[in-house]
Length: 293
Image: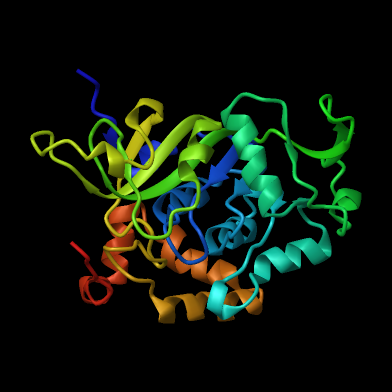
């Protein structure tokens, strides 16, 4: 029988070292593993290399503000309807972190190559009209051995750890991600270790998940953190929406370079995810609940 992989958010990321390469799931204001991100910030991890999805948001901005990030592969980092991500923009302008400029194709095809254990992937003619290859020397050209034409290539992207959020996961790690899925399954296959935060954990006697609904198979998952409201203040589709007022509060503080006040209140002042939920309060959390089941 497969061992029970369920643990806490704090224990799930306890062995991630300084300097690790992290693939980070979530798109815009949805499905980000905030409980795991908070646990990393609380631990004071440093010098991380982040490779988020092409539409990264608040988790990346928070990790930068907390001083956890050394290098970032970026297509976009923003707060969606609240504008650009202030800490990311500040770091880019002041050159306080190393930024690898990319686009959606660079990240998607890079992870596909990494998941397939290929050194690179050739692309359709996407970059002839852009300056991206000038600022990212990893985007190169080679000769197509079949046609003799010049093709553009992107290198494989792989991570030491992949952090993802799911709505429902069983004890073996089979994760179901609802809402707008990006390509977490591909990202996970490009990681040496996979950690899932999950709003719900299926009881061992519950029916097994429908394989057609499993986004990341348990065979490649190392740990599952039971984290109700584990994406808060962002949304977990089908379970709860995002907390707009809290996100506005974050944006306003970040814009004034006062993110440390937010982190002190909601991350450092609590010992773990359970205390974090207690601080937010039951009434506020329940007001965000939604369901399609």
